[in-house]
Image (tube, rainbow over the protein chains, first blue to last red):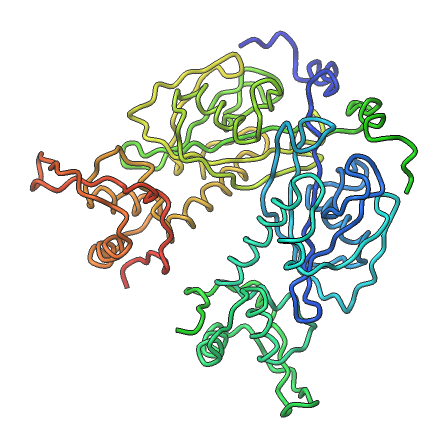
Length: 245
Length: 245
């Protein structure tokens, strides 16, 4: 062994600033359903680099506030939206020499699902503006800062995959919802129609919902309202949700 | 906007060492099949911290050699094993204030699948020893440095999940293999028996293998040898591989 020091001596003399270190940040795709579309939260950057460009919200780890990585993600989400108990999932980490003009950089990306009715958006010193943007408006039309278009694409892909075999979409609905609203949520994310009969059978078999005892009334026939059972928010189906055959 | 500088001026005055920065590293679970067991490569640390402890191989990003994150993982793998074209997949990123005594740290973890017959293990200045260790010997008996036991558990879980719905195990076999060897590989990773008939039907339906024209002879009845078709190494089944019912 090349151990000429004790670990204590080593740690005392260790200084991370003696080394090449990448910028390491956390970025988030915060999804919601709004106007019957899947939308994502974007911020307009008020700081260099990429000043004035739209980007996914994110930032650096705060050593004083963040004990673990997900704390940084939750903190950023709460700062922008006030929501502090979202469905949050780490998607992937992107890193490279060329993705940020400041130098070698790494970003750990998360997606969150929230109900936008409960949210009041707020900017901060790092952003001039913050808004919901439909996914479809970004894919073709809107440029994003850094590699955030690629990051967002990875988050959307993960969300769509997960929706095929989990009950994740309940996290996009208010606490009480009808089966039709739940089916529409699946359909909006998957961007295709689902067969009502097989959807209902699947939800029945999964036993993830319970009736709240309330009814939704309005322009349509009154419909039973449901909520997710505890742990029903992220149930795994044994087969994928399929489109009509 | 608070833009009092141009981006060029900003970048000129920007110095990452003015900020709190986490240690950011890449760690890998390199899996192989050896002695009919799933095994993982471990290195014995020759440097502080955790000197003398067994750990997953890994290290810091080399700004001169690594253009993107996966380059760092591939480089580490090649240094230890000589293998430079593995199946490589990013699993998850772990980060926190307490996982490394040097300070706030982040590790991006990958798993790789390789054929161990082709491999000559080699240490370097950062490791005193390097060896294959059966997964079962680690889970209960062996302590690992840092949070590497948790990292390894995440890699094993991802591998087991993936094996249920993809053809990933072909990456653990030599170029030519029998259907029985492929089934055994699935069984070893899943740690349970699979029904031969339904396994063969699934492989047939997936159309991911082709006959090489060669036969395996030996103590058993001669058996046809197969190879993965191009892009057959990571085929997604529409239903999970199941155990016997």
